[in-house]
Image (tube, rainbow, N blue to C red):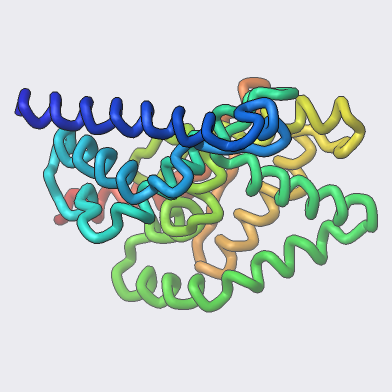
Length: 250
């Protein structure tokens, strides 16, 4: 274990040194590249991924396939390189991994608000998920497990787990922090958006989740806006009781 840790550390150190040399080897060095974002690992993504994959497997609590990136080292390296670029952007505000998705979401909500298309926006977004929702509804009707509805609108969809970082999960409930505040603090100041997090919660989050719940045949509850930005999506009290009864029977 100790030898593996040393090997991984040395590999990462070597990569960092190589990346520094690579970045400095371009004409003008960092000064010439200041208009763009670079990880310093350009062309070295496969080596970066190999080192990161080894580190992940070393500290994995399960040693399971979910932490085995064999054969996908280059893809993993590209993902890590992208994270390095994003996290090194501090101009204006500290950029985060979900920035692109946050900004795109804010843009289409702002557009819908400006053109009085909020209802149409919600209807279109719900309709887009209809094929998946229909499959999940059949499973819920077959098993009686309404927690699957909560999974369908959160943990199962990349549109949620790539947008939201902080989550707390318990049977029939999921609590998360609204992801929009960090970007809105900057874009509202620049005049790009006039939305507030509370407004987004009331005109987008609640009707979208409630509408998805209707498709799933489940009464999904969404808490009212709180100043700390924490939002809870849950089953109704009646369905929570039924879920606990179902879990006890298993």
